[in-house]
Image 1 (tube, rainbow, N blue to C red):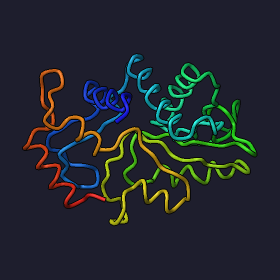
Image 2 (cartoon, rainbow, N blue to C red):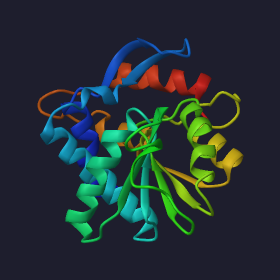
Image 3 (cartoon, rainbow, N blue to C red):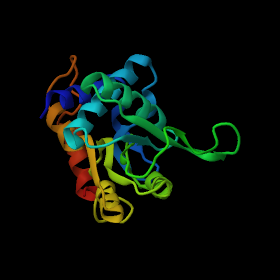
Image 4 (tube, rainbow, N blue to C red):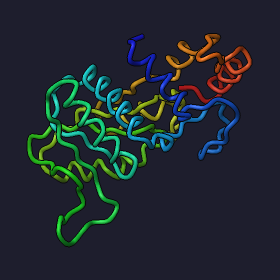
Length: 224
């Protein structure tokens, strides 16, 4: 596993974004782990987060894109932080763009925030985590309506590796099948388990035998 992926897993734990225990998800599923990207809120955290996204995007798409699109609302700070990090790390300016929930009819009019999207643009979409694909359903037609645009793919922070709404494949695979573009994550839960299982981090074992058994049981039922 790449060094930045290992660091990102530890970063999620340090930021209390990734937690282990007993949680009831919005879907009603009882999960032994929970991810809340809303726990990234300091300048230092956002700077580091943008760097991890930038490295994963560069590993996956190289420099073969023009615009980073972050769906409102959580995608807005993600797209801003990542375009800044991408410029610092790789010396290339990528434009950021997001959508508004409501169309603005005065001043900076329209539904887009940041850069516009024009014919010929190659777009990478950035999100925190995808469980239902609802935000893609909302933003895909917005991006397509801007002209002859190529969506290169989607990058999320964590692939939970569980069945999506269709109940057969993961949410990321559902998006890939429905919209026809690649979907990727900085890390997968398999990589999280590989890095943390039975290994102390800062004096604590986050995934011990009991937690591993709970996760195995969860994936037996919901795994994709």
